Image (cartoon, rainbow, N blue to C red; front, side, top):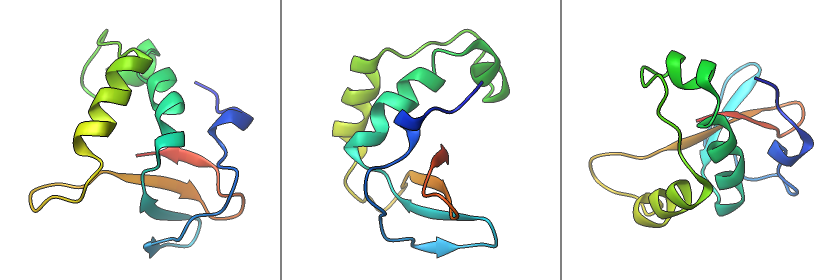
Length: 90
């Protein structure tokens, strides 16, 4: 799986938790297309424990719309490469 310039956010976002090379930030709506692409990759879904489960852009958008607000029981973070701001995971 390769990451593209489309996976790189246009503007830097606030880092909530920072490590040496990566940081955690809140997911943005602009992350949805990258997440959908990743969820259509068989190697990615196999490593996530859901082999063959593909998510369309519409499915990921619906999930984002439903779960983007902070909740008491869960929160999904964007994992960003600190040197570039590139989205590399969640």
